[in-house]
Image (cartoon, rainbow, N blue to C red; front, side):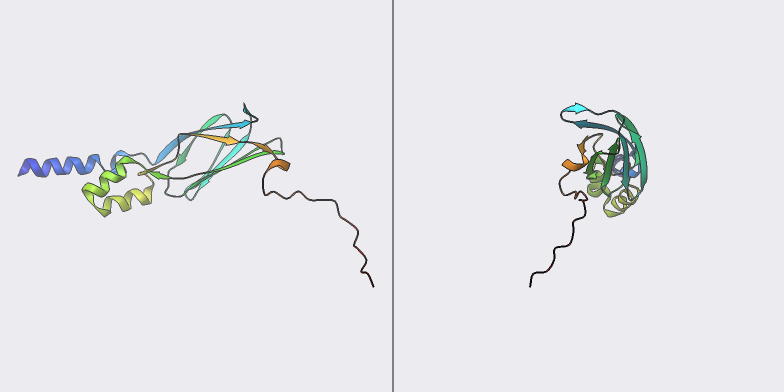
Length: 148
């Protein structure tokens, strides 16, 4: 009986991301435009746990979260890129659910330890006028007189 209890205790600790997992994650950011790497873009990474800055290509350590990670990059004031990275549960959090039930999952969810972002993020850069949905300001036009 003692061996069974010890085995269950060891399995629950091994499956617990809050015990074995990291709350921080290094992420490499690279930027490309027209199938070529763009160096020197300033990028901001942001989730509900904080905000971080990196110059591409580069690596930054972020605080993991269950929330998505928004990545915005800018180079020379007119070349931009944006991606949203989805936070995905890692294997340790599933071990917590199977072995330990909901308590460990709640801890992992609150600390972000049971969730990961992609290790490498590639941002597609475009000139400001090429970005879909971005409205360029136009030159003012003279008002059209009303016809009688």
